[in-house]
Image (cartoon, rainbow, N blue to C red; front, top):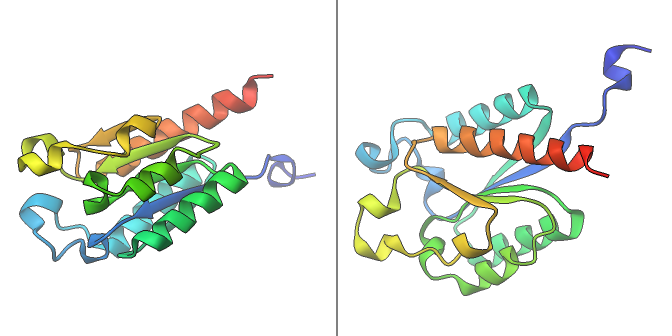
Length: 159
């Protein structure tokens, strides 16, 4: 048997993105950077592969679809990296769906919400997330994926 045949299967991870994140690269590059959404997808999937994660990146402007994806993750015990976008500040439906998580969930933000307008200082997701990474540009996703890889590896080692 080859090493690939004996290696454990990659841990599936969902990277969920909320409203306007599909416009990365053209939307306020002074705030969100110049990396396109396609570039973000490539960066997340490439790093995921290095970390032994099977990363699936999704984006929606629809709150209901995001809630369904969070239910899917809870039902399958899938770790999640989530950038809720504007839903961060007011979507109690997403908060309640995220609270049902059965695996680590890390909230990410490209910018630092606390360095911006006051309405961005509130996250209804943070209290039910495993952690939050913000303010490092698309690097926030890399940091979150590394944290998930460490967390899921530790859980696999625990009896």
